[in-house]
Amino acid sequence: MESSKNKSKNDQVAGLLRPPTFTLRALSIAIALLCIVLAVMHYLGPMASFVFVLFVLAVFAHVAGAYIGDRLKQRPKGTQPSDKYPDFDPIHDRPLTDEHFAPTTTLGHTGPVTLWIRYAIVVAVVIGGLLGAYASSWVDPAEFNYAVLGLCCLSGAALAGIFAFTISSFLEQLLSSWIQASRESSRR
Image 1 (cartoon, one colour):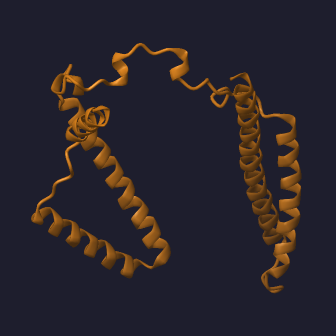
Image 2 (cartoon, helix red, strand yellow):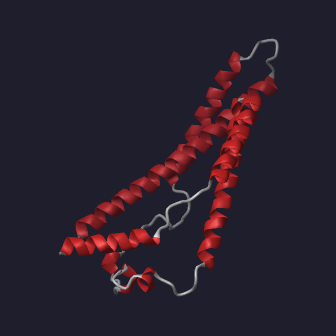
Image 3 (tube, helix red, strand yellow):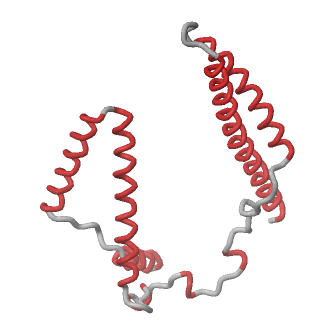
């Protein structure tokens, strides 16, 4: 008897979510747009195609988000699944306690860049500059000058510094989250 009650609740929840519907016209338009995108990608080349697809996906995501947000705004106020299905018991009808929520993390707390991250950036900038100088030796000797050497050193140092900052910040957040998670798990 209990399983039939759970099954009816699942059916009620599934009834709240309408399956996606589309017409043959919409499918034909989607196929035509895909053909146009593929033709443009063939004409542009691989790198421009990547940028083009990224742009099309960004536009699609914004349009889809606006559509979904508009549909949610048009829903009558105060209507809940429990209004349509009286047997449905959503969690928001029950009183919530602290045990229903995860503990707050320190990920949102910001502070100054720690000393070890600064050292990692400085070391990476020096190594990146040296690798840039080494890479400048690959330039044709007829085209080599001090501007090429400076540009190679500067770009190598900048890329290595950005990479070191990104990786060291990520590792610091990962380590602090791991420590906090192990402390929280030992308390429970």
